[in-house]
Image (tube, rainbow, N blue to C red; front, side):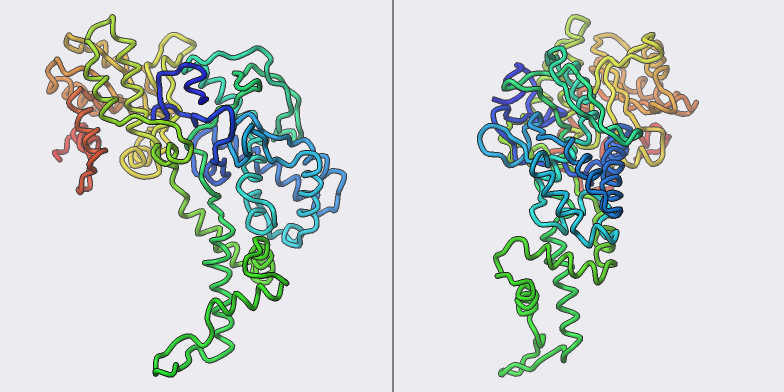
Length: 491
């Protein structure tokens, strides 16, 4: 049974901000630290800080040979069954480094010349260079280290989606980066399959690690070794038919180095032993690989990819649009309109706009915002917007009016802008008014430097859905054209 089914949520995976996991088993998705590093938000930055502070203390214990301190740090990690992510079969059970695994992980780290020499600097490096450390181990450890942030996210999501929590249902240790130690705390969390449930934002999960040890071995280390071998002999040989080919094949080079480590070609650990051996001799190879990967972060999984991996169902954008368009105008249907618009926008703009919140209180509760999103775009219109305008968050106001929009409505949205929250918003309205006047009022606000309001009626939503289904070939999409109109450009 999935979270959406357990708590009778109307949304499917495409409109949910979190992974709609099967609470009776594990979903083969993993939390990857580089995914967190690629998100520019206070929440993600807090996660990164926790991971880095913890692993630095572990490395300090390794370099100082402090076995007692190292084991004390690792033993506070526990199996993170609450997320229902990973590779466990049947009932969810984690693979974190608790109990005997802590001792094994410490032995591997403390006995690693790569860790002792400073070659290993980040948690995710261990998957490149240490045997038996794979996606599930990295994900489990990361979950433990960002448990505070996941609890914060889960509680906010429960309030947003109407998921009930149980008082004091969770009690455990959380990593406190400022103190550099574990702190025991208790929290109210939802219960699923008899245990507390942690919800995981879908933009931070991956099918495999961004720093993939197989990729490092196959496309970097092995290529380096092959070029070294070619440099030792004539780079080309003449075949019987007169064709020129490399004097030594990459396969022969691979066989040679696998043989050096007493391993057959199918031994899974030998690649990491070769990775480590070569990286110790040529640390710039590892640095170059990490720099390349950092410069090209993996894109978040699409809703379709998540559905394919997890089995969670999704709706088509057209289905969301049809629900919005079929909503009656007027105050009685205002809340329904808001919820349907949010479902459409969440599916339409993911992964650019994440962590939606409805009716957000600001200014000590004196004003409320219909919907606000975190702008996490790394390309496209919303990324361009964040690079050129105060748009860390995108404010959304929904007006399900069957009457003209007046100055108070514009002033209401403009009054909710600020340099810290952002000064870009979407005004959703039904199109039963003079659109030209609406756009003119938005241009006036932009010209007066009050903020930038993109007014979207039903016809605009149709255009955006059509654009998502059939992407345009031109440089500018519908939103960019509307924004240019705000600036007084015709496009």
